[in-house]
Image 1 (cartoon, rainbow, N blue to C red):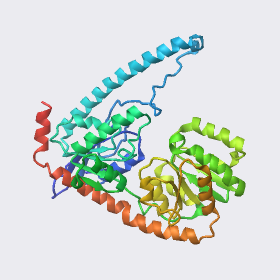
Image 2: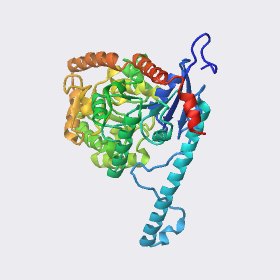
Image 3: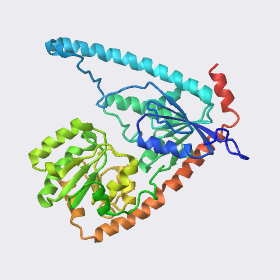
Image 4: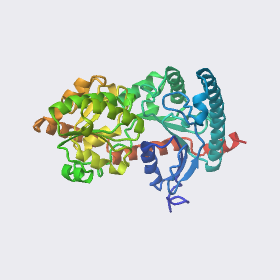
Length: 432
């Protein structure tokens, strides 16, 4: 991206992105702006994305254990000599110390954000979800336009692990809806929630971006994909969302036990680094008890660029979360002509009509999950052809990244233009 803007054209729109890391969704959403000479980009994050041609600012960030608790690790061999009561006291001390450290780090990160805004002079600040550090932008001058892309269940279930966290997240979301100049959501359910929380229709936009890259995600050779991935099973069930309770991977493992009894030559292929080896080891212990160890495989975190190969190798994609947004893996699978089985949620129903273009199931019902998997694996082809025709049409109409990327860029430019001529001076004076 040229430093000085476009030759013989208007100055580029200066967009500052705030996001947590690492997230492939944030990377893709920001990359489309970095690659467009109509924009000059700064990225402030707890992860160093290293976008070429952009200003990359790394924050210290909050390190939060995803269970919602403070993780205390053993520091030495003498821990086994400490009594449980003393251990509990030390844990409380460490927890209190950790909270104060996190507050201090948040203040330092806000100062870094403030200094970056002063230096970069953005026309608009674009928050990618309301995870930390995005909500630090609430402390910026109100004259600076803010856009928010709600995702990961931000507004539908507040995407947190405990009741207290969900309450705090709800307060952040409600304030953000009122504070933002423009908001994007990826489902009708999220759009309705934003309205319920006081948002106005003119500021809330249903834009499923970046969507599916239809030049990358399309029908491919199953045989070639399986050779590349060294898969010798005749049937493959792809589970791309992660491991652990939130993703209901336990239910999938139990369903695998039912499926394997009827279709022994099947592989349940799990990918994603979420959950990690400890969760996988737990699943494998259960798989051994069920006698299906040879039917489960975990490939860990897979680069996004390699995802088409995984869709092409599979017979069906399973994602049965009880709380979900619009998973990109769903639209990418549909674009690759891969049948999908989803948890029965409001957002899933926007895309799948049960038995018409996919299957919906109770996320906690392993028998229903297994039944749906077997219906796909045993289908002679007529039903799957129906699924494919409907899904390919729906994705091309509603989730084509080429179309939706242009829509979001236009919205950013419009949001920035609404404050053109006011923002730089206002921002600079606010920090004096």
